[in-house]
Length: 119
Image (cartoon, rainbow, N blue to C red):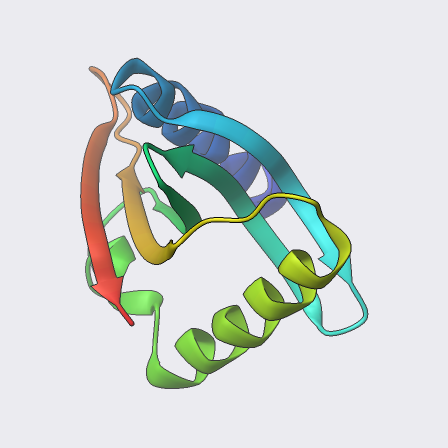
């Protein structure tokens, strides 16, 4: 992984595997509209989960999950409404999760999953 794009894609693959191994069903990945992109949309029981993935090689600038700022949270809420407007998936509950992936030079990546990280 030479570029940040490759690192991000690698982290998203790890996050998808992590979430699906825990029973979530993938609905969409890298969904884009004019306002931005949703990394992962999944179903967890009755809830639709909008999941932001942040991947880093080190924690010098903070843990990956810390990169989901209040401004990013506002954008994710907007994107979730856009996604819901164009898909036939309906759920009584919506959830916003954050997955931080720390990719080290050696050993497996460290995954931190924050279910319902914000509302």
